[in-house]
Image (cartoon, rainbow, N blue to C red; front, side, top):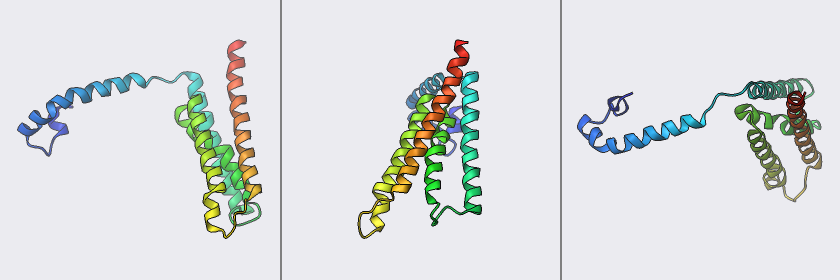
Length: 162
């Protein structure tokens, strides 16, 4: 891709004078980025497929529960919080297929869930009252997500030791 393709709306003499010093910098950044991107190992591919399928299973489960017993604005709303804590970290895990991506997803889910329950949800109420069933269900979902994460990683650890 040449300089003319990038700067099709800028006059050619202006683009050569103005962008030429930056063009080398942009290309070197692209090369540095391509060095960071590497091929995934077979274990990472399996992890990515598992995490994505687990997350999609959770999405289907929530939709089925919503249309059968109902989740929102019902006494079963704690199930939605449990499913959020259990399945949402695996969306992030499916993006990176690395432990750091799981922990980023775990942190984002925790901040979203507990931040909403302990702060945002309270703004619409006249007095500060916590929904302990929803808070505990989301926390339990996060704990089970961690257990599933450990079980999945121990599967590969035990396979490599054997």
